[in-house]
Length: 313
Image (cartoon, rainbow, N blue to C red; front, side, top):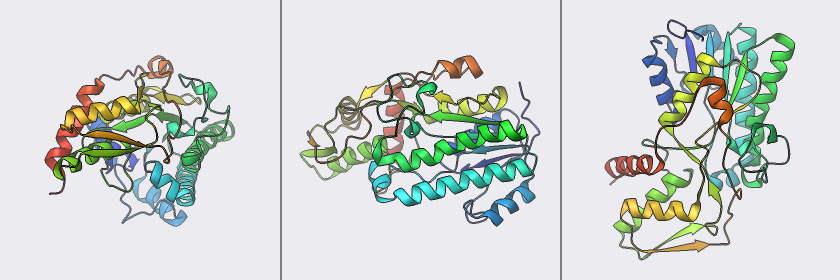
């Protein structure tokens, strides 16, 4: 097991939703040298600024969480930006980590990299068996290339890069922006705003039939910290719970937790996204001993309570 305490560790995206939890998990392990680059200081899509980051921070370990990301609507509106920014950030950060002699690079990818019709549960071996779901394919492919780069660098340079594939995250402090949020915060906001307006109904995208898997953000942070300590292999590793829920049932749960009692209307002119998402998580347990511990209903309740207390009035 790699001892992390005392090592300088760069966490890109460390001020974000997941990043704050990863930084906390590292500090709980005695890591006092965690560096969180901010976009105002370092634009990670610009080569000179990435080079400067490594010169300034001199990290032993890099955990790359920074991403340009959003829900289905944001992906449809920004496919070029989502591809370019994520591709360039990953490529530059890993190349300059290699040049700087970084001990370990932890790449954090996305479940969106899987083929649209991958067999369920998704096993890491299925990653290349088809094209991703069209609405988020540019983002998914950009993040998948981080895996390829890491494997190529390992083969040619002996560079220690690992690649994790977290499922959809949720929890307190999530992005609740109406334009770019993912499904859970979007639905929580929609239900509470409907209650505020005494609206008799909410409208949801698609037909409710797709399934999704969700991982509580603190559990994901623990998985990343464990993998940083314990895993040095070339193969990608799923990070999730191994349980799926239909979007229809998800909406019903969120309506119940928020107190929304109106009608749920499905707009079938809007895309469903990928038909099913559910992971085989056995490799994460075998490789670095990770198993999610937060029960989904409890995690949802905490998320609803947080947003109810912190939302704009």
